[in-house]
Image (cartoon, rainbow, N blue to C red):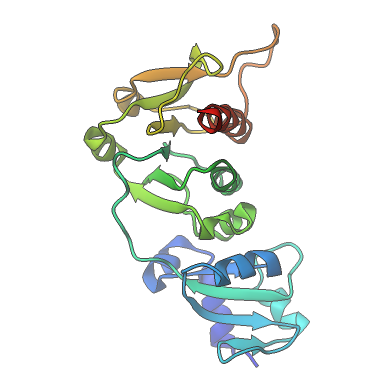
Length: 240
C-alpha cells in the first residue's frame, strides 16, 4: 500500500528545490533502477507492480504507479535514491565541463556519452540543469550512477586547473588535427549561445568539427557534437 502523503512526496521530487531539501531523487524503469541498485548510491525506498522484494520495496497497483510516474508510460518499478554528498571535483584529471547546458534530455545524453567514452567526471556550471531532474535521470539510462557530476562556479574551478583546457567553437582547429594529452579539460557551452565570454578566457585551445562540404547548416546540436568529439578523443587515446 502507498499513502497519499507518499504520493505527494514523490511528485515533489520532480522539482529541484524539494530534491535539494530532502536529498532524494526518482529513478524509473527496471534497467535504470538495476544500474542504481548496483552502484554505491543508497536507496531510500522503491515501489513495484510486480511483487515486493525486501523491506524497502512496496507493492502498488498499476493505477498508483500511473499517479506517481514522471514518464509518459509508467514502468513497473520506481525507486527513490539518496543524492550523494557533495565532493570537490578533480582539478587535473580528464574532465568534461558544461557551461549552462539547459535541456534535461541533452544533459542526460551527454552523461551517457561520457559513460561510453570514458569520461568519469563532469563539472557543470551552477546554471546547468540539475542532473537529478527526472528527465535527465531517464535519458542518461543508468549512466548517472557511474559518472561523477559536480556543480561549481566555473570561473573559480577553471582558475585552479593547470592542465590544457579545450573549448568547442564554430571556429577553431579541426578536431581531426588536434592531439589530445591524457589529461585535459573539455568545455561545451549552452545549446544556443555556446561558451560564455567569461569562460572563454580560460580556454587555451579552440576546437571545432569541420564540415565535409559547403552547407547552409551553421551548427550541430550539442549531443551530436559531443559524440563526434568524444569519439575522436577516444580513438586517439586508445591508440596511444
